Image (cartoon, rainbow, N blue to C red; front, side, top):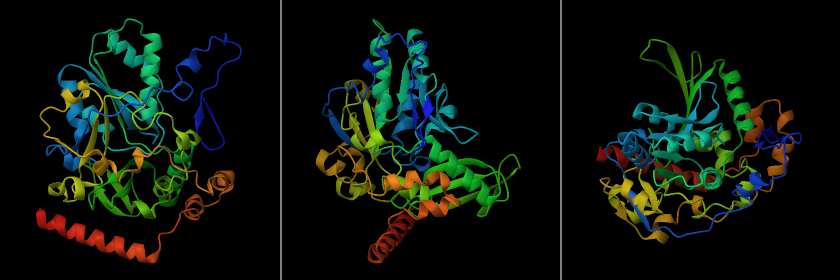
Length: 375
């Protein structure tokens, strides 16, 4: 893989070893996209058992537990100790917990596809979770490599995705946070709903001496965390505003039912209209059931079937594509020469008009009051 000037990794063929067979191009989900399909059902709800520690409604750990309980394994994206994001394998629910919550960075797949193939050859159930393009890539890979292999034991789960920032930008930003707070970063939660699900925060965790609320971990070590509203954190704000996405994300060929996944997960942002009984700011999930295999894994969760247009209407991840921001080229052209990275990135964040900020603040206060009353 070779990293480009924007911080995205691209495959590079070794000219000394390439024989021109074209296999790499034949399994590329961008060059050879899968056919689009409509979901069998659009459902919504939550897992009362998992919702509190989940970014939305807790559907993913419910599905993962079904696979783990059958002696299978789960593949998903986790934040590593060096703050990189990579796909890993889990054989227990304790290990699966690392996959919970979104990671707004393109993950390193390493040998994940090969490992999925090997576990299937061993007769194990496998759950693979990832972006639509990763799921499509896995299915294309297995179609070419695993002739005759029974794929009925494979379950794939993707999510409503509007794009991903590159690992290069994330590494720069994590480094700038460490320099700003004088401490090594030990963790990040891109979507923390302790304050609110609708108006979530991003939380950065440090080893010691960072500004913010100091806590003592169970092992007695010093730790600190920095909490920001996502709209006030330049990394998250630019991601939400589509400024930092991979170029192919602006014309993604695997969105909207083209990935081949069994289930597609998302936030039920339309909960007030679709499932008002769950409108308590605790989180709710939207699930697109794409196959009967996926439907079986949801048994016992108590999800309700919803009107697709109403349920999916408030989630930008279901749009066909997102436009390229006008200042995107300017942002990346000067990124490497930026002195104060956070100030530089903040300069590209589109500011919300004061009137909208006031409305948003009032709504957040009302949601918080409702949440406290319900609890």
